[in-house]
Length: 211
Length: 320
Image 1: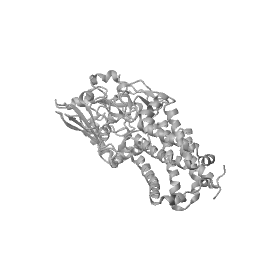
Image 2: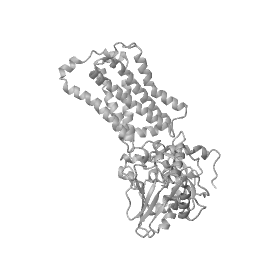
Image 3: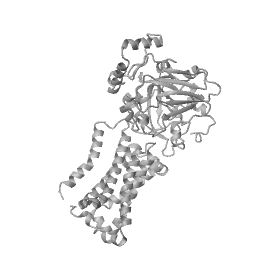
Image 4: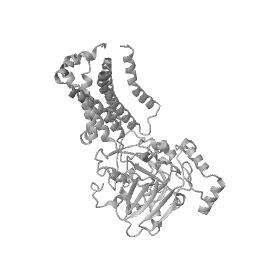
């Protein structure tokens, strides 16, 4: 595996953040900066979630097993942008008005589902380390299926907040449907015994990684 | 004479490339200047009141109004680069980018329906219906952001009086241009086109309701609804229909585009009301563009003293 590839991908994942920081520095965030930051970071959460979810299908289809080494990085970047998105909401949009924020989360379905998506990602981020993978064993795989729910919740969040132009939420939804559909098709086609024997040893996501 | 604040941008600085090109298009389109001059003079009979042409042209002799707010106005740049005008694209910056497609001459507005004096006005006749005033109004979008905008226009009631509505005229319907070539956003049916809106007659006759032809002392830019639009400041912004081509007096409440799109979310009246939430988000607060903190939304957008009596006895939760 080319040793420069992982740092290169890491830097590439930071480009959207860099772009945002630059725009903020040059005052190029548009007429409604808080709205721009919210939408920009939200977009990238979805993009990174979808990227994370495409690793396994791409691996299986192309046979490039090394792709697995990037899955954690992509997932954590999804969480990074989700943290930015959520912080923008709490700090910039509502400035710690926790009474209003709680009301929003409880009463506004699109906020409820968005908050849910964020909360679902927290245990995934926390258990992303090698130590956690070892410690949780079989349960790690089960826990990390929550990413499916997080992605679905994220797309619904987007769909429920747009006024009338549903094109972009729909595009994300279609990509997500394909990525999840792939897993369903694989599951149906693979008899249970074969599935069990096909499961890679639990340490394979960490092969070749330095900690 | 329009007295500007010193911080206001020089009009020569803000005329954008799009507007400049529009102007050149206009000159080219009207072939010989002599021909167009005589056509203009012949039509209006007066060499001293040239027709309002295109965005960027100054509007003179504007009267001030006691209905104007003294709050800080948003900048011309903000007002012309952050628009919900789906006919020119659904992103906020799209209308400014696509403004160049919306040519506003020639333009007619048909006044019809339950009136004694139906008439099709050329836009330049319409702007002479009453003396132009400066009206600095708050505009509150249903999305929970707001601006303070120095409109130029005249009371809608002036036009209504000229039309002489019959006893059957209980409501007024407004219709926007339907032309995907000039408004490319209409190629996508995010809403049913053309955009339609309506007011109850007493709302339309209220002195606050204006037809606007300008902004910041200049002819209205395309992205703000040129050449003529409605401004009803006590209602959510989508009621202030843009690029009007038809004004029809009708007996029953006319259909309105956002109500057609989502009837449980957008009602006919759509008065700004912090106590009645949008089904999907709160209307209790708003972001004034340019400010960091949110503001509490005011009942009727702060115009309650002037308009609350129109709705006395009405359950505004039911008639949202």
